[in-house]
Image (cartoon, rainbow, N blue to C red; front, side):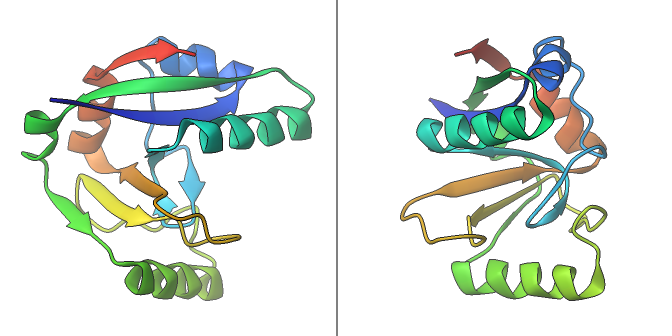
Length: 142
């Protein structure tokens, strides 16, 4: 099975990502340093639009086609909403949202920042294996 996940960003980053040059050490989000994808395309479009507008650039959404069997061979950490919220608060208090890593290949958690969005799950890829994995996944610019 293939799971489809989405990443929204500005047009400059779209070119790098589509070229297979994802750097998991470059980005940072609510669960720290890494490259994030989510399961809701419309949320990726909303994020991309805001990011493009903020930087005065175009934007795009990339669909990643992730092989389930290969994904489940990665070292993963699954966080519940309460765990993700607590970790996010800790990182904010410590100022480590752009640098924190869990020491696994992928972190799976609900989105906890901003307003509550039911059934919105993110995957954060980190580390060397996570980087190789996400760069090897098929992708389509939507």
